[in-house]
Length: 211
Image (tube, rainbow, N blue to C red; front, side, top):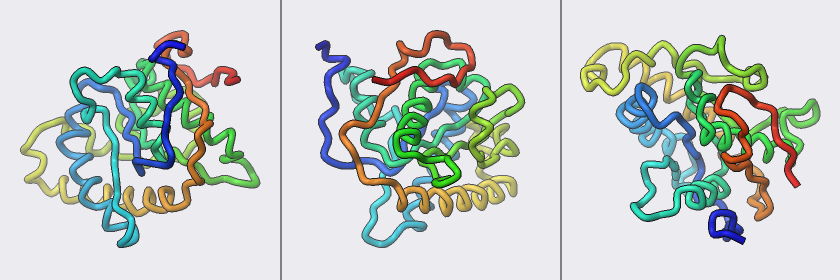
């Protein structure tokens, strides 16, 4: 067995939220400069005192860490997925793999059914929506398109619009906290969809068969 496909060794969750996003601008700058700081600030205020919020983003990888294994390890140990959706998101094999991995986890858990409508994916609509794969529109999305124009500009933080954006992110945190607290018990056999299993970088959400 190659190191890339070695089993993930973990005993419990390590992260509450795994942020999945296209690692290029404008999404990259928007996430790092505006969205993540507010999420980090307000999510802890929506959780019980004993619960210390932990958020994962790929910028935390260290030089020399094998990218696929480190990413799989962190995703496997995250309670929820927070994907930042745009058409570019669905052109990325990495983003599709992250999303499909958590969709497979929901399927194994019997989530998003009439008997159990809950889930562990909290999508943020960053831009567009009309060109998303049909499957993702079955999951309710929190719409932050109104503020996607901000990019990584520092000036945005000194406007009335930023105050409105802050209030919107507070609402995100309130809802996301409920998802975090209701996440199922961690399991070592969560399914994983690898980027190599995404046969094309074009938008698609057909889930591959997982053995």
